[in-house]
Amino acid sequence: MTISDTVISAISTPIGTGGIGIIRLSGFGSVDIASSVFSAAGTRRAHSPAIPQKFESHRFYYGHVVDPENMHVIDEAMLVCMMAPRSYTREDVVEIHIHSGLVVLRETLELVLRQGARLAEPGEFTRRAFLNGRIDLIHAEAVIDLINSRSTSALEVVRRHLSGELSELIENIKNNFFKVLAIIDAGIDFPDEVDEVHDVNAWVEMLKSSVLEPCEQLVDGYQSGHFLRDGLVLAVVGKPNVGKSSLMNRLVGKQKSIVTDVPGTTRDLIEVPVTIEGIPIVFCDTAGIHPTQCPIEIIGIQKARECIEACDLVLFVLDTATGMGPEDLEIFENVKGKPLILVFNKMDLVDKPNDDPLPDDWKGRPRIHVSAKYNQAIDSLRSMVIEFVSGNSLSGVHDRIIPNIRQKLLLEKAVSSVKRAISGMYQKIPHELLAIDLNEGLNALNEIGGNVNRLDVLDRIFSQFCIGK
Ligand SMILES: Nc1nc2c(ncn2[C@@H]2O[C@H](COP(=O)(O)OP(=O)(O)O)[C@@H](O)[C@H]2O)c(=O)[nH]1
Ligand SMILES: [Mg+2]
Image (cartoon, rainbow, N blue to C red):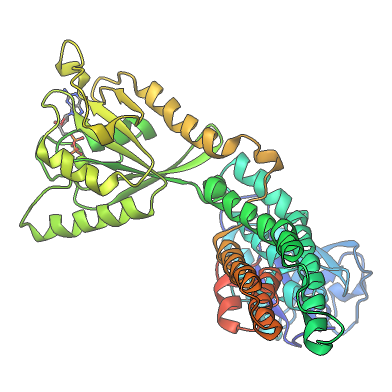
């Protein structure tokens, strides 16, 4: 059962120096194409390309990649065929393992393309696996995450998705949903036998506990834990010259941002991804926020505001020496809706950090005095960041399923449809109208697992892959 008769091919290993590189082919006819450029050792084919070869499925053959036009040997190789449906794509798949030099890899790929294969698009192998029903969309997305995982905690999350736990959970919720829908449908078809939604409370209870709450828990899982997978985005924010760039450089352990005593040095957003204690964190150094006429700074400040909007945690940097000013108060208005740590920098300039009372709405925020320049209390600040992540998500990462953003949006859609249906039940709206809301919720859940009719959605998902996967 193939979706397409075209054979696709790509280099499936990263380009660079390494022991081996793999060219992968998938589709009906891939064995013939591979066979035309490969000669198994110890056979007479090495001298005559016309002699046919047979390969057993799932068995490695040693031989050479040979250009059939001139019998020129390109490299030593191992070849393995995985015949449909026992393969990654459920189609006939062939892998040719050769040395990983870019030249031999390209030459071999070129040969394969000349023999009739087409260059695979990013994610096309996995897309075929999905379209051939070998994996659902949740699994396909977990493969992307696995490839992109930058930390052990992210990997842990992904493993659970790969093992099908999220798919199972969604299936369960859907089954519960079906039960409720079946009864409501019965109400539509046989209105006399099912005397309306008799016990509204019982139905609401059932919808709440078996559909609404599990969906909401998954949405919560995203809110509090998505940065385990996507990385925590941390914005370093403050007015010019308070030491934001110095602080970021300290935290990431590299001189990534330019530091000078000229206010307005950082004009662009500078993003540095690092992994701290297994957690991926993207530090963003931002332009100092203040009133300015400079057009470059204005763009930088706009980017800083967007970064604040999108980030998970703000380090709001203040100058201990000069104290809090009206500009700081104004910046606070921009960041107060976010989880934040107040970082009083330049503590080296004062004998004793001043303990002036903070404005009321600043109170209760975690705060710390540091010196970015002299590396004082930076480790404590780093611990506060880790603590923030831990408090939010690390506890129980092993028994947590964390959906991705696409899945979360669909879960939210399901939640709001079910809520609408519940309020409709209380208002005793007609069954037909209830069924519309419930069906909408069910469709959203279906879409999570891959019941997606829209090509653009699939294109977007699979384009996140690299070529060769
Ligand atoms: N004394 C002292 N100076 C600092 C400290 N952190 C930064 N600076 C200085 O403050 C100036 C502005 O620093 P920078 O990191 O560029 O600030 P930004 O504009 O907020 O990014 C530079 O001259 C830094 O050397 C600190 O902890 N103590
Ligand atoms: Mg700066």
